Length: 301
Image 1 (cartoon, rainbow, N blue to C red):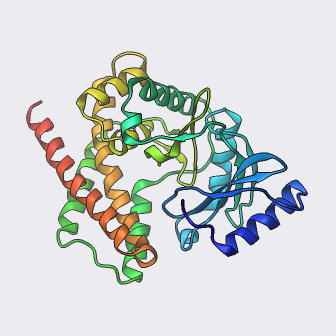
Image 2 (cartoon, rainbow, N blue to C red; image 1 turned 90 degrees about the horizontal axis):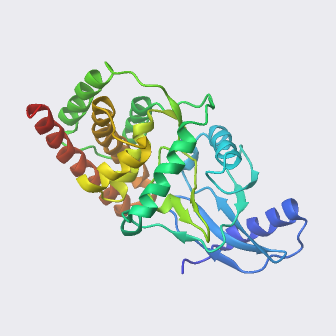
């Protein structure tokens, strides 16, 4: 069990007093998370989730934008009920999911969970809302590059060549424009939680209007899908067979995704050390492997 940080406990007690008019809180349990401090907290006999932003996240996350997407996800039933969100500090309180089981790559490869995730994606992507929050992959990448240089963190020796290869793919994919829709944009397995009755998609820090294939790609990569699972995911999402253009965007987004998050990992190195260096390196190596896979697909057309 992760330790409870003393200053976090003070903040949790103060929040409970302000939000719930509670003089005392019950059991406080530290949950997982890469950058934030998240807790399950008993207040007046009921359990809630308290999310306290981690150090350095103010450089990466626009909390006002996150609030917009979190409210939408709660309203359309993709996420649980949002109780409180401070757009200045990023502190969030939400209803706790009863019987909550955090998903893993193994559990998200199970056909029923995969199909349930595809259905939630479809609800989100077809809600016909414009959050006015744009998820600009390559603008974000440039911002991460600046943060990396400002902190004196080294990029990879072949980064310039790999960056050019990614941008060349972007030029080709941009010939097939798609409608931007509300997307989660960070659908790693730990952001899927199964309750007693259903699945939820949680944590909307990176949400915004984007190509819907990004969300499917993110799940595919994080759950380590093979060709069989990818085909099942696309079939469940499209309620049939995906077209050639959708498949092309799906495989291109695999490359975009690791390009962006490998840079994000580098921005966290000054705060989280070798753990994030390894995270970034693993994504960067997979990025290069997927570049080779896409090249072979193009050759075999």
